[in-house]
Amino acid sequence: MARWPGSLECWAPVLEDLAPLLTRRVEWVALDFSGHGASTSSPPTGRWDEYHVAEAREVLQSELRAVAPASRTVGVGHSMGGAVLAALELRQPGSLARVAAIEPPIFPAAARCLGLPLVASEVAAGYDGGAAVTLVTCSASRFSPLLLPGSGPAAYSLVAQTLRAGVVRLPGASHHLVVQEQPALVARLVADEVAAIV
Image (cartoon, rainbow, N blue to C red):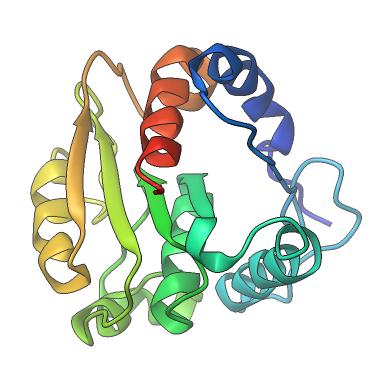
């Protein structure tokens, strides 16, 4: 079974930096997708995007709904996690009140055969839900959601139009691994997202 190096543990430093920024109590849930961290299962070959969206939906329904309604739930995900949360809200509007997707991979429709999340065909259909979606790019990042060097901010701006999303360039963020390497910046982003819930 192939394992990916990412795990929920990368969020621990963010949580430490986040605590003093919050003005109210917040329930926080992080998960290891199948094939990641301590997870003991693997997603089906070629269908990992649907499988991970289903995993995120299950966590929302089983763990978060007991403490918070969708109207007070903020989803923050990095890279694939951000793409999965955005895809969840796209496919099932009303799952979240806010989504902050930090440098999510957004692939052209031709990549559908690889089972990659948030493909152009879904994005092109638009979004008619009420969640505030923010696509976050790092100011000095070379990460490219379209697999074209340097296309990040421009690609996110184009996608944002059909998602009715905002694009935020995280100032001072050096590159794609911002969650692990600059947790204080991500904590400030999360605190701002939480504060926007009224």
